[in-house]
Image 1 (cartoon, one colour):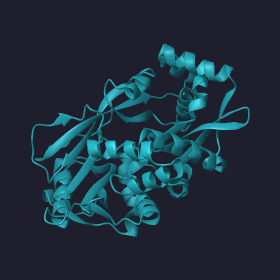
Image 2: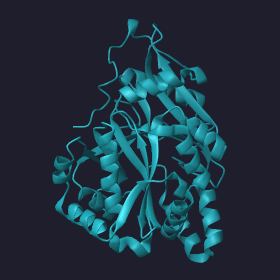
Image 3: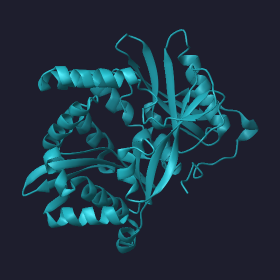
Image 4: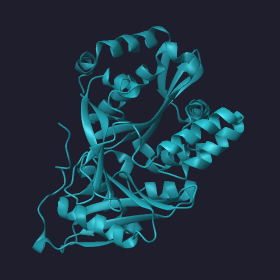
Length: 362
């Protein structure tokens, strides 16, 4: 089972009193210690504020909930965007709400609504990742597949689905190699941009990936797949003490017959296991969709990722089973595909870069 935050102390603290305040640079170490103890991915690290502010020039708000002794009881990293119509939206980082208990979660969400009232913003979207909190508001759940890792590589290999093992072998026989190669970021970004624009999905600039690698330092790694000396794919891996995640992976379409994605995932598993990490989060996807089935072939556990929307009406919780990101509307996706179809690639690429900053960025 996934650790839902049990590494974080759950005692309510003296008299249950909590104070929520803005984080400062002096909170960096304590913040990162707290989210690491909660067994979450590195998508909620303190350093993401610098990445978002420097690359996308968006305002960030980091909140800390403390008890009377000054111990951290919860943290919440937020950033703001504006839609194409100019509407102001507030998003949390992925796994951005990390709280010791429901009281701390409620205190952080309440403080968020006080800072961003409905009169000023169109929507607030907060995700607590694996942990489900009892919050009186609209909520959604998405699916993520999480693979167990072990230092016993033979056991880890045997636990893979048969189809995935066969495809990894196919890639190896075809001569595909995977190495840690940050110097090949330009090549990986070119493949990523082509692939995502063709799908009608907004994209990050190269500077975003470069900044992530710099900000997270040893806890971020670019694994690159090559064939006969040519880069054919790449995976950005983020490491935390208990769980690794690869939020971005891409491969060149003309080389898909060599199974680059499968061997990159296998090598990601090996790299994380060598660090003593216990799980690999393969990211969110639509249950039953093609991406979900691809990931499911590796095995692992299907887990819920929880989202909360304090400014929306509060129906019964639902799963986002259409595979849609809770912060993306069908019109956004249709608009992106229409741009791809109608515009020359260089123009479409710039438009998709522009669209990235108009919704959830990370």
